[in-house]
Image 1 (tube, rainbow, N blue to C red):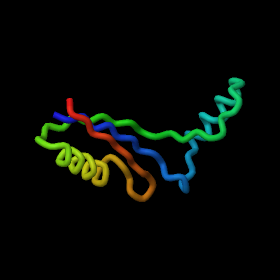
Image 2 (spheres, rainbow, N blue to C red):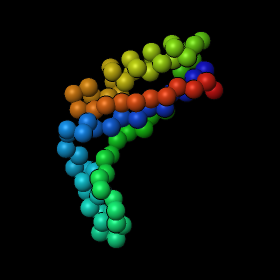
Image 3 (tube, rainbow, N blue to C red):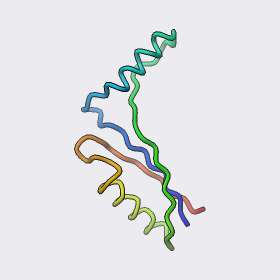
Image 4 (cartoon, rainbow, N blue to C red):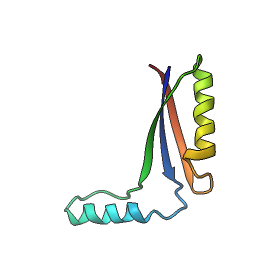
Length: 82
């Protein structure tokens, strides 16, 4: 059994209005020094397979086919045995 931890973020070239709103709200709360905020998704997925390589391939395919929009989003992941 493997646990995939996936982070999906909007590409830097895509505007992130939710991130801008959070950035503005943090500034309104007096929090200084925050330069930029980007909002994304964090997904955990348990995978029942025999090898790390297979778990990585399954995770990559899930990201490409469903979890991330390839036009607007980037993804990164790690896979660990559990």
